[in-house]
Image (tube, rainbow, N blue to C red; front, side):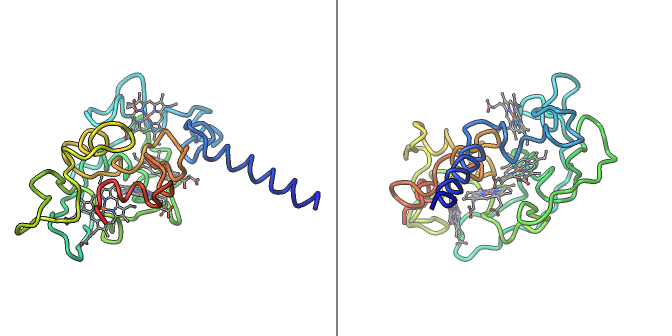
Length: 209
Ligand code: HEC
Ligand code: HEC
Ligand code: HEC
Ligand code: HEC
């Protein structure tokens, strides 16, 4: 019994560290690796000589020039997925498994690529679509409209603003619609709990199911 309860306590502590509000000790804290120089921010941001993009401040990684991912095909999609926007390419600069994690700040000789379930690969056909325009025009019962989506310019989220303001990037669904790379308090870097009072809170914020 004593062993059991101390094991549970230990799991609880490990769990609370991994699910902390901050990036510290999360899956995006690479300060303990040999290649990040003991720093947390530098694999993604730099104070100087940054890569120009408006989707993240002072970005420190190369952004793939002409993306050619295999896109989500769709089951009954009314929108048309396009290549991921820059906001998603920032994530895919590690998460498609083609660029080494330590390739930042101009380094191109890294060898540590992401593996396992963290590797989305260049085939995004098995992932929630990104690069899709989600605006008022998509919502409704007409041709090329989806009746089971909330109007993103009207519906508010538990974060306080509208779907468009809180979750979309220039009216598009991108990785950061669902993830905040710095905040792991909800697990999986989700922007909100997806198992709260209503079950799938994140999914049900946009999908009227
Ligand atoms: C694994 C990559 C990664 C790491 C590590 C990282 N960031 Fe970011 N950061 C991003 C991305 C991607 C964005 C773009 C906006 C977004 O998706 O939140 C961003 C946006 C930001 C922003 C502007 C938007 C906001 O959330 O306020 C600030 C400020 C920022 N990061 C600071 C930091 C600091 C400070 C650190 C280190 C403690 C850090 N970041 C570590 C990826 C990272
Ligand atoms: C930021 C808003 C948003 C969030 C959050 C969101 N979705 Fe979506 N999702 C969309 C939009 C927009 C579409 C495209 C719908 C269309 O074109 O008809 C879509 C498409 C889909 C599709 C494909 C439908 C088809 O016909 O192929 C599925 C399945 C889906 N979402 C499930 C989920 C699940 C599960 C979650 C939670 C993990 C989720 N979505 C979270 C906006 C969102
Ligand atoms: C510098 C490379 C890098 C960038 C950029 C990056 N990630 Fe990650 N991410 C990783 C690695 C490596 C892991 C696996 C960490 C581990 O082994 O626990 C990870 C883990 C994750 C996880 C799983 C976390 C968990 O606790 O299960 C999610 C979700 C995630 N990243 C989303 C994103 C999103 C979304 C972006 C862009 C906004 C992004 N990442 C940008 C390297 C990166
Ligand atoms: C519609 C919401 C949504 C979008 C858009 C989205 N994700 Fe996720 N992602 C999730 C959810 C929810 C989970 C947690 C899945 C679970 O716990 O089973 C997740 C999990 C992950 C993981 C952890 C590994 C795994 O499979 O559980 C990674 C890595 C990840 N996402 C990266 C990304 C990247 C990179 C993008 C953009 C290309 C992206 N996500 C777009 C909702 C989303």
